[in-house]
Length: 65
Image 1 (cartoon, rainbow, N blue to C red):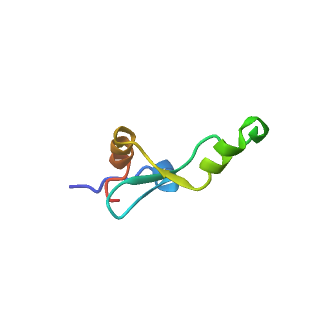
Image 2 (image 1 turned 90 degrees about the vertical axis):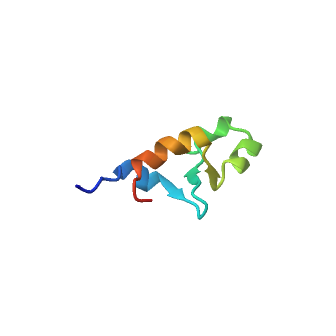
Image 3 (image 1 turned 45 degrees about the vertical axis):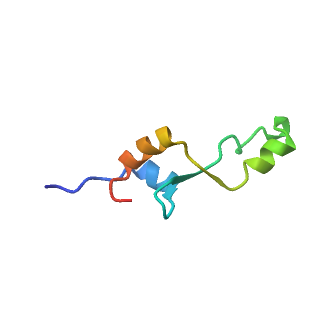
């Protein structure tokens, strides 16, 4: 059987944790930050764990992760 390809966009944006959950960056942190509250900007620092429904889609993009 031929090897499956990993989506390049997915491997740049997501990582898997040791238990198999998908870790991603938090959205809405690129520009227009003056309208965001301090609390939102603090909580959006770092990364987050994706919801199960979204994680299932992302895992299909990375067959060998």
